[in-house]
Amino acid sequence: DLSEEQVLRRYRLDKAAIAGLCRELGADLESLTGRSHALPVAVKVTSALTFLASGSFQTATRHTTGISQSAMSNCLAQFLEALQRRAGRYIAFPPPGAPSMAPAGGAFPGVLGLVGGMHVALRAPSENEPAYRNAGNYHSMNMQVVCDAAGAITNVVAKFPGSCPNAAVLENSALARLLEGARPHGAWLLGDGSYPLKPWLMTPIAGPRGPAEERYNALHARALAALRRTLALLRLRFRCLDKNRGGPLQYAP
Image (cartoon, rainbow, N blue to C red; front, side, top):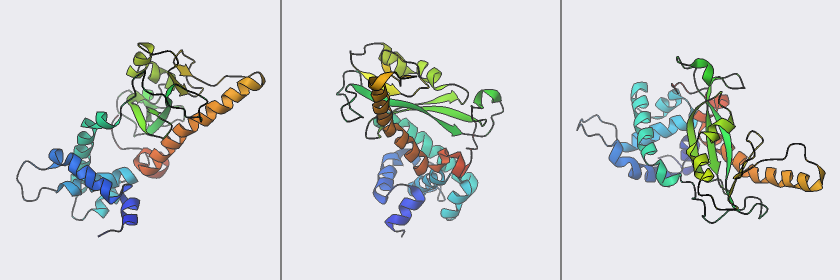
């Protein structure tokens, strides 16, 4: 009975997208026990979305009539597992040799993606706690994200602790091995100054000399704006990722 505006505000997705998720995940979320009190797929999906959108179990349980916090936790776990099994259908890095993109209006032909890091705050883990304390002095996972000029996310690495620098995350990722292998000449990633310059990674020039290098840096920064915008929208849509709104995630890494 909610209006489209209310649905967007509460779940960060519109009614059609939520219905699509229910169809997509239905086979995984339908109860196989035959119990009469098993939760419907739509309740599981909207409960999980409410938590992801707000970062608060209290908000999620308040907006879902008759569901306890423990049931809410189960819904979230089932939803995320079902979603992750399908992630490869939607998050796929273009193979080297795919049609290039030009995130700066043609200034950087051959760019396959924009790479950067995003820290997701979480509670202090009981094991190896110092490894998760980042330079901002809070505990996190350092999530590597690659997107294209339109903001579509094409690669994610979400397994390194917050103390791990962006360059080390990239160096130890399958993406680096891919690009160090059969990369055609003129296919690149763009990254900020936290990464080293590589044959397949274009970074800003430290201490530019002259107008040509200054222009390169300006165009580079303009190109990376699409990644900054994508990460900002991700935090805005799913506030569980934003410690300033929902607080740190109350989960082990």
